[in-house]
Length: 260
Image (cartoon, rainbow, N blue to C red; front, side):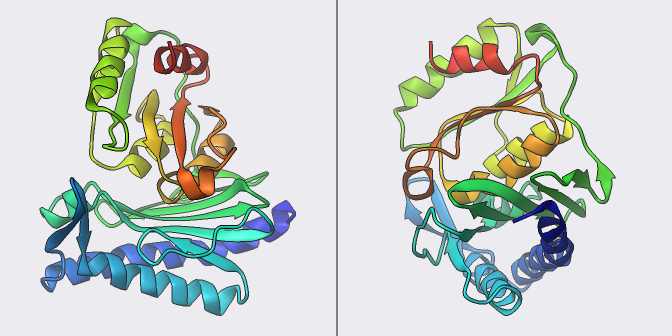
């Protein structure tokens, strides 16, 4: 799939992602944002399913016969050909409590590698786009990773997952803070990843994250010049992987903190 075809797809995905975020916000206003638990600290709302259904329908209309994998609706995992990867609402715990730190993520993997991403927020209204060989943008303006050189000037977000021991998260946070960096955790892995691409953060790391949280952001981050680990390798589509994005000068050092 050449850059011209990827650019064509980005043009179609930008309004789709924006409309999906608006739909989720409207459904919450209508009372469909109340959460139930899929598991410990794993939230689901009626809006999640409806938003994913909307995206699936649009993808099926625009790209018939291409496979789709969604956080809520599942799908057949394949590392051959194109595979759309959807997270209808990343940051559901924030969404369900009326907060604004959540987003819609649509990614495309081609032959097992993340190549395209469209991520949208409703408040503020932002659409982040990127595809292999096409650059990366925020609301149409090119974006670039931060030029931060030193950990004592850096802000790093560390996502957490109960799929890994809490003690490992605490130890990682301790190593990052001991390096001199500031730390935060905002409740949306996708936003932490894409904000590293924008340069609002100097790094994002998590000991385990799933493909639907990271595929779109990975394609955007690479085009924005971020240092990224090899997230889209091995069994990432079915099982996820550790992830680390960073300003170029900080990536190798941050990864050493992740795997001491």
